Length: 159
Image 1 (tube, rainbow, N blue to C red):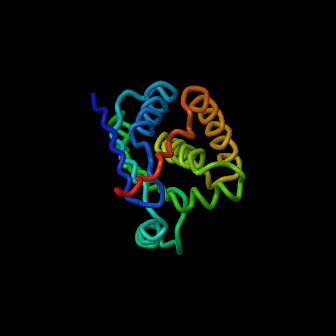
Image 2 (cartoon, rainbow, N blue to C red):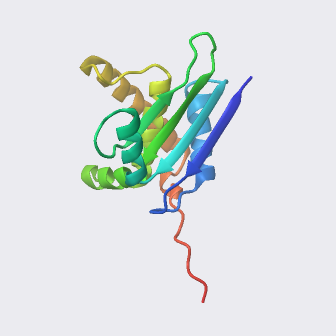
């Protein structure tokens, strides 16, 4: 049985409690989605790095909120892939939707993992189904975790 989850914070805009994000992601995958075999990596990046990834791999201009690389093998039951999440975009979207960047970050994790589970958001009907599932999973995570605690206080300089 494979169960691997790597979380890397490559940005400096905000300190993130990676241990809490890990617990939330494991709860999502193991308990809410009932997936016991997984090999996942989540990279939290800034807009500059996301732009490079988006333009290099998807030929889309500029940054975006989340990119999912699906490494699933149809012959193996393991959930496998990488998520690249842009914290700068999470901050911008949080202001736009009157929420917090922590909630947006959690939404992007759920969204990316749903893609790995086979959900598609290109077709309007499939998008509605995916968004409904996303909303249900976010409610369940919100009831179990304090998402606001994903923000760690800034490091204070030594005096």
